[in-house]
Length: 399
Image 1: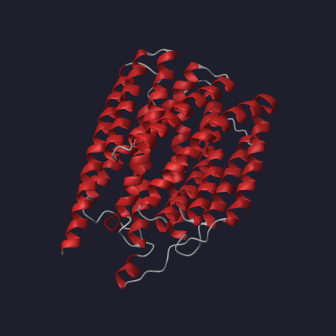
Image 2: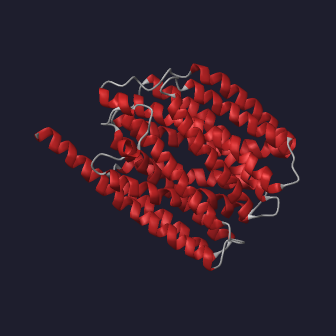
Image 3: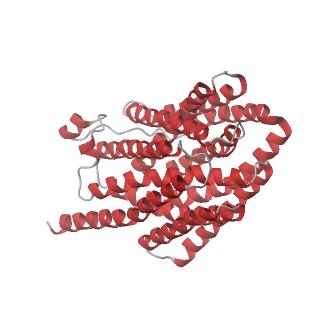
């Protein structure tokens, strides 16, 4: 793996520390005030709107600046979020949640744009699987350490003290961003690329064979990914609100993902098979929650965490391989539209959760049915996209 990708992995680890704390304990902080699914969804809706805007803005900046700028702004946004949590109180809870989501979303958006575009520009062939596989290991290890350390920190310092500590960590991340490789989008090489450079047109992103299947995969994936992301947390919070127990449950979930990693490395199956294995684990995990007991919620999260390791490792690698033959303009356009489509469909799912008052009932069962349809469609779309890509390469070789 090139040195530039190793540095990006290190920054990914720093950003993951902030992200894991935010994903678990900031959502818990909101959940503890009334146990409202709608409040958690509203905060996440605001966050994803800011995420999409920040991602698109960062991608445009990379035509003139290196990834150091958006990475620095990601750290600044994270610091602003923790400062807001520590010192800003509003009587209007809805406005407070909407405002909180903005800096958190910018933190994620600037970081994701820098890292995804950096990997796309510097990675080649097998680098993608190596990068995402290593990133998964790092994230799982941090998913063990960060929740336990954070739970201890909150118990000792309270939420206010923990927010101050995370603000200090965001400052350290800001300093580390200066050591990142100076990756920017290279200047266009052809007149056609010059006309399209920095415009991120839809037809540029999805103008190659198999793009239609990738587009369908993205539309369905956003719904499924957000369901898994949101309800994994809510299932855990429904079992217990003790911070140390939540951290220990996350250790259990991380152990399931690490077991999946061991199987992935030992069995050496084709990517398509791993994608289906991940899909079935996720599907069974979602169905188990219909039994609506603490044990069912825990077993569900164990299965879906293991399934997500297989699913996300293969799905991300396939998506990045799909665009590797394109020029810089196509890669950037694809990544911007990919992120925006995923965010838009995530927001659709969040909107569907507003009527939920509890994790049961007809509406909740209907959501699970919808997500299962999305989930089982994705491997089919990915297979067809991969086949179209292979046929295009074969035709290029024989032409």
